Length: 83
Ligand SMILES: [Cu+2]
Image (cartoon, rainbow, N blue to C red; front, side, top):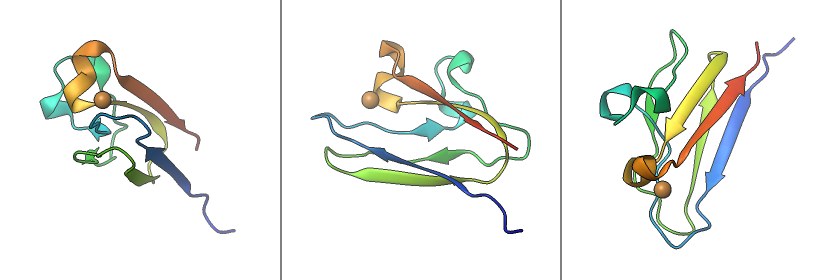
């Protein structure tokens, strides 16, 4: 009963501004992005040092995300949400 909820929290513990971005239109490289069919794009916006961002994943599948200012430096990540 009750559905499983997959929630992830990112914390910016560095001294730089970062983002958690899953928006295909603004990815410099399409290999840095993945969004399961039916899932909505999301974007943390600028996370200042010390700030956090949370996202609830509703649609199962593979999500690949990038940091807007640092995508070119390889700051990307992947989350797999089980069914
Ligand atoms: Cu970054």
